[in-house]
View (cartoon, one colour):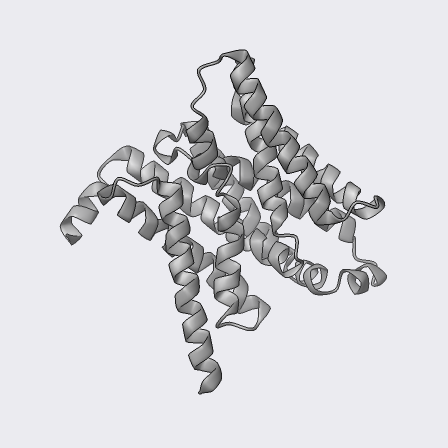
Length: 272
């Protein structure tokens, strides 16, 4: 069995899928810590729907889906930030409006255009079709996200737990919010290839919630959410190699099982 597992990585497309998946898992987990703790986790879900709509439009017009979707989703994340800051529409309502509208527009474009687009790959992912461009972008993105967290660790920490206090101390909270939102946008678009538009938000939400069941300090939650995310992805990828099931859905189920285990361990830890 172990020999077979090592043999599966002899295939280049498996190695590329593994590298991209690890990069996206780390990015989603690190960004997810701040978003979940600030109760903005559903932004990832909203942006993924925008990504689907943008990719569908680009495919219908014979444009490069990735090149078109990334700036559109970044613009949408900036719009969501402004909408929640200055509008009477609450954050979750703004996200729901944008998400449902984008998904509907994308689906209409697919059917009206008559373009041969594999909707299932957009919605649930197609990790074994990774391109060299997506591979390079994923590695670059992960390095940028990790560097951002190292350099801006204290500022992100303050922004996460008390944005008002951070603003009062002269911290450029708007700038840092925009940076996190932009990085999240690119992560979501690239992650759609791994998980699909409907499941990418799970990589943002599950690892942080799982880590919080056992670890209480912000630093430990950041570190172990990334570890949990990567381990769950690798386990899901290996299972998918032997079981004929969608890889994105498999990874979500592995994350769900991990969360249940962490909940049990957390309860036991509290009683000791």
